[in-house]
Length: 272
Image (cartoon, rainbow, N blue to C red; front, side, top):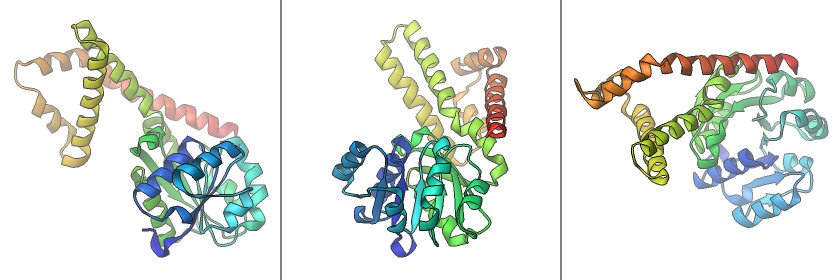
């Protein structure tokens, strides 16, 4: 449970907001009656109320006033309007933002002096409770506040704590990363289909292979090179495949994809 069973309010209940609600309840951090949600989409609110038994609010200020922790899960371009609306309702609540590209400074400047702001960058895998999330805290955030934020996002996957200037790197790696992996899974499945497997079977084997390999990396604590050697016997099938991947520059292509996405994230940040 979150320390002192703090009430959590959501401003915005899109895919990421709903995933967080699902994760929080699945992890039993708090009970449904301690969650308050607001959204311009009233149909979505009714659906969430029916599915999760949470409280829904008629406006954003109601969500703020009823909560100890506020999660802002709206599109980046909507953030200034939301902050203007809730400014007078924010007192000592912890503000957690998952709006991509909006710096902590924007929140601290728009809200009361000393506002406690944590910025988090989760990725799309939050929808299956396997997100990779990076957390960074504003100057007024206490250790227990950061711990509460980490606890919330650990409920939908795994969390790291980083300084804000590294969030562009996070965007290039884990933010965009699922798309790279989808491409790899598709390519692996194509290879299986080429060799005679039906598409459904090939996709299942490819996806399970990626998931299993990732789990070994996370749980075994062994260097990836050692894990690769466990599969790569002398003169066997795997070394033949690895030789092709190295020859075609797959390693450098993946590195360049992360670097390029990171640079684009920086460009977009400068335009805001």
